[in-house]
Amino acid sequence: MYGFAVGQIMTLIAALSLLLIFAHLFGRIAERFGQPALAGQMLAGIVLGPSMLQWVQSSAALQAIADISVLFVVITAGLEMRFTHVLDAFRGWGSLALMLGFVVPAAATAAFTFALDMNFIPALVATLCVSVTALPVALRILSEFGLMQTRVARVAISSALMTDILIFLVLGIAIAVAQPRVDNSLFITASVAVAKLGALLVVVGICHFVCQRLASRESSKESPAPRKFADNVLVLTLIFMIALGAAAELLGFHFVIGVFLAALMVTRDLISDTRFEKLEQTCELMTVSVFGPLFLAFQGIQFQLGALHNWTLLGGLIAIAVASKLVGGYATGRLLKLSSHESKGVGIIMNARGVMEMVVASVAYRAGIVDQELFSALLVLGIVTTILTPILLKPWMKSPDLPATMRAGGA
Image (cartoon, rainbow, N blue to C red):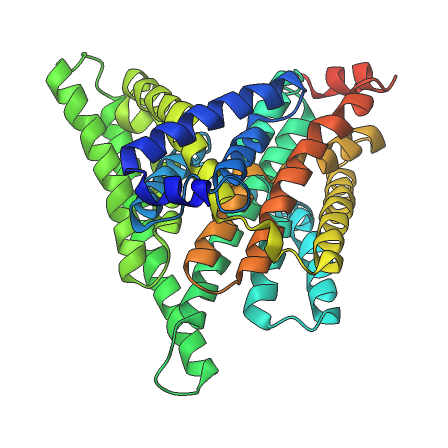
């Protein structure tokens, strides 16, 4: 009773302070036990939220802060990728091999949700969450284990790039189709959603073309720009990413899709090495220190342990998520002529769903296309699979095949 009263009278600033303190504290504790900080940060929200102490309750103000947090999380993830790399991933026969990292988990989850007689849209969201690979988490794990210059890293990153783009686009269509409609024609609604997606891709294509032209002009300039001009460039860059997110919303999609695609277009050639590093470091700092922990803690607040009644659903999703990524990653590696040991490493790395899976689940939950039980199960799925990734990678690293693998993949 006392905890509920505290949650009711707590101001927004007090709630944010409490969430940040607990998120960083629990995150550090998780890291001391060899686990990713995100597990502790989300646990902080669970402890503070309705599931336990009830000190902090979900509110419109906190949801607005969570939206801003998602904005920075997605910008930071997008800045670590390149739009040209995404386009390269779709070229040639290699794209078919890379697609297995998405197709195998998607097919397995679709079969599982069909067996449970789950409705189509919630089943689709579950399929997307199982299929996603959190590229930022995968990059950090690869870096920590010294694997960034290996073929394992190149295949895992390329597959994650393709998978995450597809998942955000499909999620946008799912949200558009799930909106209330005047008529009963699903075909018409789906056609309009696809047409809106086509319009969004046209806008993205135009923006990409303009960015390339500006990048070619910027790269030809060698004289340093005044500081005020450099600051204006960074401001305009942020406005561009947010504006493309707004354009996505106007077309009926979530702003995450537009922001993510815009961040992919921001390159060193476009805004110069110095400005890009400043932007990347600033966004990374804000995401790691403020917005990332707040986002994860807020997910913990929305998590309700009492909503987890269907343990068959939760256990099945976790088992399928781990097994299907291992199989899909292994098949991808073998088709791209990696050794058996390297291919196993690809499957392990692609199990890191992390914050990107939680972004997908959160967007779907906020859009009202999944219920509280499935949302809570998907949050648990994201944490468990991310925790398992470094655990599975440690024995893989101890294999006698590893030295040869790393030499073969060296840059």
